[in-house]
Image 1 (spheres, helix red, strand yellow):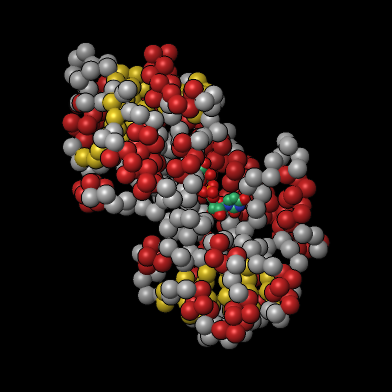
Image 2 (image 1 turned 90 degrees about the vertical axis):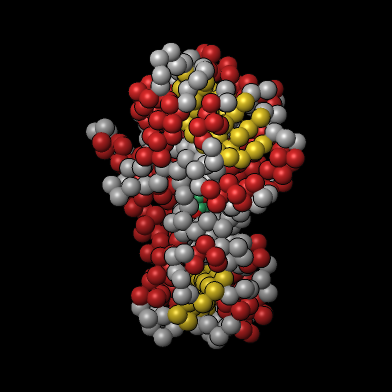
Length: 438
Ligand code: UDX
């Protein structure tokens, strides 16, 4: 069993730390934010992620998982150190790696034996070299380490499952010794014959960006197809189905909607595009995916206006779903932000409800009218918009909905309501890329 330290207890760090301890290793999760570590030590989880609480509890109780703010000590005692701190987008579109650099310096200062230093954070291609240099500059003579890039592909809302049952593990290792150690870390996956791809560091860093940007591209593509479907009277769901049945295309990530959001796609596509321009090899496809995504968000606002038949002044709109996708409380880059902002800017009012993300959205819109159920959020409204495909919205009682709304206007940006039922109950509605009753 290896002694592992994971630095950074955000989505990636916490899920990875808990997951690796579940593989049987002794894991210390370290963070400089005392409030986070205090919560974790008290058995609480600072983020909402299905299955994470159980995973953490199980491994803490088994004595394999612990939490500390003593980052230096945690580095000294580890065989393998995972860097999983945040890399937010800076104003110039590049990822801000200052937290990663600071961790690299600490690792250098505390390098008391051979260690594998492994980056899980999504970092710009070439960051591996910067990290190695910073470690070398700060370490005392004779320090020894190997560097590995081991990008994470976990999705919020199913991160635990993605970690424990990944499609593949990418290990960009600078030496065979380091690759073998990392393979040992992931031993249960290796034994179960999950593909473990050995590459060099730059290739591993590239795989992460290329994969995320491709998925974002796929979403923007289907969103544009959806918009054209509206113009020609086609149904985008059947188009996506027909496309997805071609094994070369696959049906995944062909669901049209109000534009992608979250902590990864918007940031990673920007960083990828910025890097490509900097290297003189522009990625026109990714630039287009970003532009299309911005347009899609605005398009949803225009759709709502068309449905209402005027601008938003004096209107009250019920917004159902604030998170950028279901099963998370994360509202970062969520399309609901642009929708809400546009309504407020034009003098409209918003009644908002999300099963778990009301609190997160309060950090962005402090004074919004947040409700505790979809019925309350739709009570007396001029129109209702579904922004996130939570299951409880899929099954909503349309008869009841019609009764509580002032005017039966529905914009379903996730295409989750039955168009037949909406018509049957006399709603006027719109959606993305399907038949519209206006
Ligand atoms: C993504 C990647 O899937 C994951 O591999 C990577 O590690 C991090 O980024 P995440 O941001 O958690 O994960 O969510 P994901 O399920 O990929 O959805 C991202 C956005 O795309 C959401 O706003 C979602 O609503 C949207 N989306 C996704 C669509 O609009 N259509 C789809 O078909 C799929």
